Each structure stands twice: as C-alpha cells, then as structure tokens.
Image 1 (cartoon, rainbow, N blue to C red):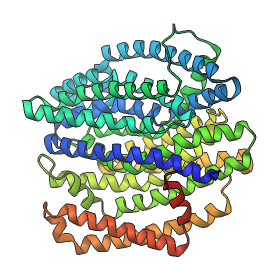
Image 2 (cartoon, rainbow, N blue to C red; image 1 turned 180 degrees about the horizontal axis):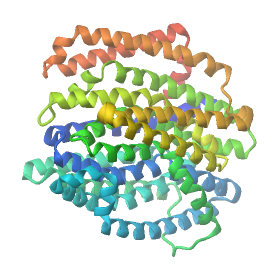
Image 3 (cartoon, rainbow, N blue to C red; image 1 turned 180 degrees about the vertical axis):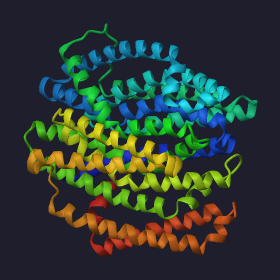
Length: 518
C-alpha cells in the first residue's frame, strides 16, 4: 500500500501541475495585456472590474466555499452514503443559485456605487470610471459560474478527484487569450473583448467540472431552493469561512481602493499580484485543496497522529517550494518583470514600479502559503470563528498600514501592509491551533527541515544576485532577456537543489516517489 505522505504528495503534485499550467497560460495572457494596454486607463478599468469576480473566484474555488462545503459533504458521504451526499450537494446548489441570482442582479444595477467603493479614485476620470462600470457589468455573472464551479469542485475533491477542478482555470486563460487575439485581428476594443472573455471562460469551467462530476457518479440536478438544516449549517460555516479564508483577497480589495488614487498603481499592483500568485496558486492552492478532505477524514476517525503527519508533510512541501520562490522575487524582481512585461505599452517606468511591488508582496509569500496549511485544521473541525477573528485583526492592521503609510511610501504601502498582515494572521492561526494539541504540532522532521530550507533559499538568492549582475548586458537587451532569465532560473534552481541536498533539508526519495506515476 502506498504510504500516506506519498499519497498526499501525489495529490499536491496533481493539483500543482495543473495549476502551474494555468498560471503559465496566465502569464501569456498578462504579457499580451501588458503589450496591448500597458498601465493605461483601459488596463486599470479592466483590472478593477475583474477584481470583483476574481476575488470571489479565490474565495470560493480556492478556499472558503471549499473549506465549508467539503467537510459537510465528506461527513455525509462517509457516514450516510453517496445518495445522502448527493442530496446535500443538490440542496446547496439550489440555495447558491437562488442567492446569487438575486445578488448579481442587485450588484449589476448598483455597479456605479460598487465601483465608487472599490476604486473611488477613478471618480476624477469619468471616462475611466464609466469604462470600469461597463466592464464590471459584463463580467459579474462570472461570479455565478465560479460559485457553481466551486461546488462541483468540492464534490470532486471530496471524492479524491483533483484533476478536473485544478485544470478548469486553464479554460479562463484560453478564453482571454482568444478574446485578445480576436480583438487585435478585428480591431475591437481590447478591454471589452477581455470582459466578454471572462464570462465565456466561466461558462466553460462550469461545463468541465459538471461533466467530471457526472462521470464520477455525482450528477447533480437543480432543485427548488429550500432552507434545510444542511443548508443552514453550510451558511453558518461559509460566511465566516469566506472572510477568514479570503483575508488576503480582502486585503487586496482594500489595496485597490487606495491604489485608485495613484495613477497607474492599480495596473502595477495587478501585474505584481500575478507574479507572486504563481507560487501561491501552485503550492498554496494544491496544499489547501488536498489537505482539507484528508484532515476531515482523519479527525472524524480520531486519527490525530495521521492528521499531524499530513499537516507536517504539507508544511514541509510548502516551504520547500515557496521559500526559493519568495527569495527569487526579492532578489531579482526588476529582471523578472522586464523580461515578462516590458514591451509595447509597458514602459521602463512601469517595470520599476511593478518590481518594487513584487518584492514587497514576496516578503509575505511564505506566510500566505502556510496559512493554507493551518486553516484546514480549523475548517476540518468546523471551527470558523477563530480564523475569522484572526483575519479581521490582520485586515485592520493592513488597512492602517496601507492607508497610513500611503503619504510616506505612496502605493508601495499597499503591498507592504499586505505582507505584514499575512505574517500576523499566520502567527495568530498557528498559536490558536495549539489548542488542538499534538494533532497540529510541528514534528522533529519539520523543525529540522525548515531552517535548512531557508539557508538553501538564501544561498540561491545570493547566486541569483551575482548572476543578474554578470548578465546585466543581456538583461538590458530585449532580445537577450529571456535567455538571461532562463540562465538565472535554471542556475538558481540548481544551487537551491544542491544546497538543500547538502544541508539535508529534503528527502529526495520522497519527492521522487510523490512525482512517480503509479
């Protein structure tokens, strides 16, 4: 029988590999947006409009709904069987559709007011403000699509079927790239084409996961909505879970409002967000998606030792991949941003501003990812209150730092506040989890590995700084940047792997076994 840590790693690898493919397509998408729109008014209007449905995508598809729905669904599945679980999923879907139809209609009617709350700084530019309102109205039904995608994904994740939910975001990026290609060929407004592409991508994602659920024996039919005991329980867990699991996204919304008062800042922060979201998405999402059903099963069965092993190996996996990513983004942000985005309408000044934001966001990257390890320990036990309380404290801190620091640091106070709040939130979560006893305590292997992984990442960072200095001429040449960045990435990766092996920070046998097809 395959050892539990290896099975867990295989789950991480499945979700992470599909998410990596999506994020790489996302980079191609953002490279096209940067070249066509730069950091101009249309780009800012699109990014702000996309922030609303995209925030809910991260709340639901990558956290809160999954964390509230999966434990309840898994409990029905294991305790009462597939028919009871299917009934609960159908009840949840009916309530979700009814609530979101009403909410979406109201939001679309009130979109000018919503936009004032989200990006009040746009009010000084009526053309940009109206454009953002129009784009948001086109995109807002994407919220319904992603909520349904989250529900079907939760069903599949509880069944141990991770591939289709992880692959679904690829369809959004394909739709957006296709929309920009058509807009460029037919001379359509790029921002409007992107907005319609968001909606098309959402419909495609729902279709993919619904088909996968049907193939897994969990076809769901739409019922008349009723406030059943199961739905009431889901709501009680889901609302605080949405806030606590999406604290980072709420912090970004606060940042968007403040950034709207600085010309270009919304676009710079959006491009920077894309860069640090790559490791956060690939590692953090994989850990959160796979770990929650695993912990739900272990805690339900009273297997605290197995739960502790799963959490510790998830933390080790997260640190092994996140620490080098964070160090790289701090060490050579300008080189990365220039290579990816500096072309067309994206200028050298845009590179500098975006790179500064990337480096500050990256300081909080390990905290963002480790939150994905700790939060399932609460949600698997259906404890939403404590994470909500911690998230609210972190959000208050972020708001104070971002708003208070803006006169001193400009828009850079926003990523600084976000990173600081992430560490505070993690510290509170980790301290609070000690109440669960040994089930959530760090084991000897994690305590030994963590500082060694940090040392290996710092060695890699020093190598990257030296390599970037040696290749400065190539980075200054648009034709040579990709080769120079490839040398840095491959060389830095080799240094990290060698340092980690020499320091005994990772077990290479476990990694090979986790990635081996079987």
